[in-house]
Length: 128
Image 1: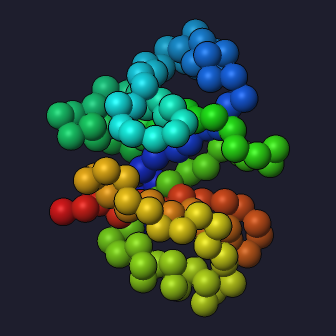
Image 2 (image 1 turned 90 degrees about the horizontal axis):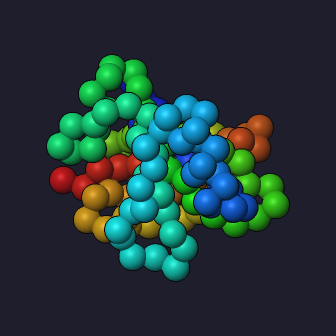
């Protein structure tokens, strides 16, 4: 069974969003040091181990990023074993790839798809 491992929240004003989530929920938010045109912030909702994985069973951490379009909404991310196989199966089942597979540093591969209902979901594959 594949599990949800991450979430992403888009924001028009990253400073305002950071203040809100820190003040209301006590989340720890730090800028990701990776390269990219837009800043990306890692959101810790629970303590993590040395690999960045939540120590609390069932909990997930996430990210905060600049909204790219008017219709951007929060996205959950599902960890899969073989992203290419899943993207193929998704399209065969009536879904659509909306963000092509990309490499995220040396950590993993990421893509987004829309399910047949129009919901956008992320996929993640760890690089070994």
